[in-house]
Image 1: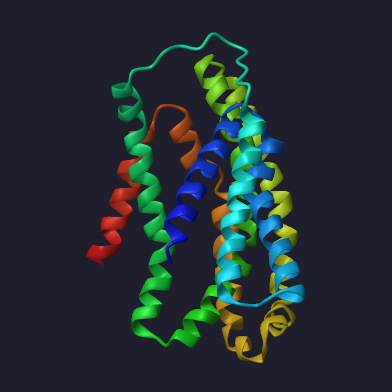
Image 2: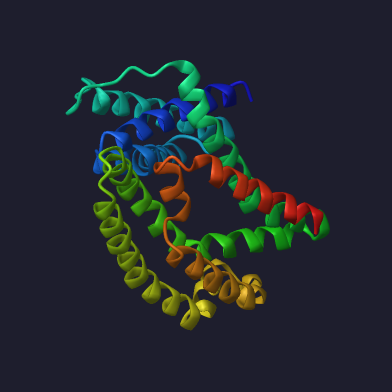
Length: 257
């Protein structure tokens, strides 16, 4: 357990560095650092250690620690030296907190919203059904992954165009990105709907009872994905306070209901 605080610290800095890369417009480096690098190293270490050395739990934890450490070092080499195409304006700490605090609130509320279903199921149902539901949500969330990937590309562009007051370009970027999401998510939805049984059988026969759930959740995730970049547009165009109020209102409405 003594390694987990260190893993948390490394993951926080890795996430910070990946967002710096995203802000610099280095989309490929951002994707590599944020998602692929540490997972690839972790899986590679597990395969090597468990097959040729030992399968003790401690080596699993150490492999995770080492993967985050190496990924963090790689992210630092990708960031430095910092290069700026425009003159950098100094911003006070007060203004940074003023602009970022609403984003922190909305991100926290979104995290709670997306975790609430699993928490409620864990309270009212068995751990077995929670495990089945967790797998189902991961599969049905495949459409949302493409939205997250495009967010990392569209976000910096919207921010740059907004700072230049180039609203026509913002409109073009959002429309084109929304079309891409639509064309990608439709085949994924159709695949899940038609092959839901085969997908669930891949995890085991006990998962077949969740067939209706994966269909319903996949349809919901499809509409979530094609709804576009509402949160991103609001956060990148100085409307982060509006978005934080929307998320807080929706969350309080859930609890009141």
